[in-house]
Image (tube, rainbow, N blue to C red):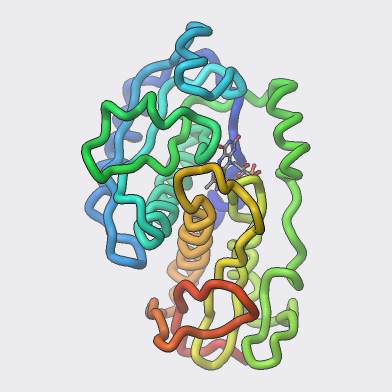
Length: 277
Ligand SMILES: Cc1cc2nc3c(=O)[nH]c(=O)nc-3n(C[C@H](O)[C@H](O)[C@H](O)COP(=O)(O)O)c2cc1C
């Protein structure tokens, strides 16, 4: 899975080729396998697939991807109750799906803002909410001009430096890049986030590795939900993948009273046997 973390990028331009039956079945199986799983806050997600390519201009307008998603061969998404903890768990579980699709060379992009939720309202019941969806299809290596512009605007290929993201909890100073957990923190650094804002902050001390949400001021206030909660779920998933692949035993725990780091919102911690040399 680590290699898929590095392989993944947002795909907004797909080939016109329809998904092969075999791939469609694999995608369905991945959704089915993920459904009984719980996120860090013990919540589950109901996933769905829409096998519709929305080809006409009218349909594209309806779905609200405004043509910047080119030739999608379908969409996947999930529904939850719209609470902070549910959103984190959605981020965590949907990213697992995204990485599994990356593994089988299916292109995806998280869409949390630029689609019309209403268009999917027939799929949900009372108290259900669709935080994000993703188009699916085979990756077209030639990106459309529109896609290149979006990537440029979001500085999609760039990430904040290590020293702005990861800190020593006791001294509040940036973590040494040679820290024994650096290569696992890098899995968070390369994660996708809404508008590439990278709102995750992580501190490390003897008690563990602590995750915080450093909210972007005045960001996405018109959205009907806390989009940056999804980013945190994604970050937790990436870090956990690293621990699992390196066979490092861990326990996820939410300390109470919460760990304090600047003004950031404390989310959760990973307790490890060893966090220092
Ligand atoms: C929660 C979330 C919501 C996102 N929403 C959108 C969206 O509405 N429209 C869009 O074009 N990209 C969206 N993105 C994709 C990000 O812009 C992209 O992940 C980021 O720019 C980094 O680029 P990369 O994914 O290629 O590494 C979203 C990403 C995340 C994690």
